[in-house]
Length: 72
Picture 1 (cartoon, rainbow, N blue to C red):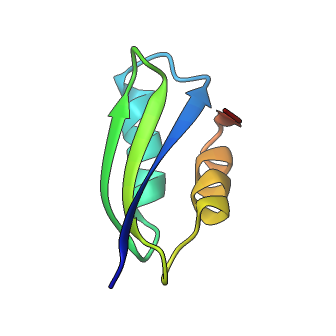
Picture 2 (picture 1 turned 120 degrees about the vertical axis):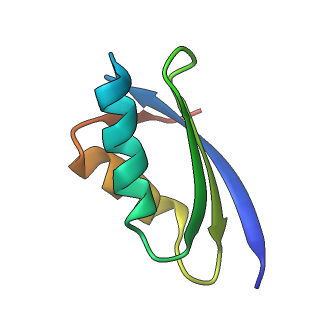
């Protein structure tokens, strides 16, 4: 299985509760192995299996949790 890493910029996180929400939303996706959310940087670094989950699914999970993903 091919592991990939993506970094997403997230707008709207203001506290550790937000960080938890983003982390849980991403970890609920099949194929996501590891998630590191940085409140100060406003980013999420996601290790995932590219044959199981894709970037768009990760973005939708974050948006469904109530946050915005900012394109690079």
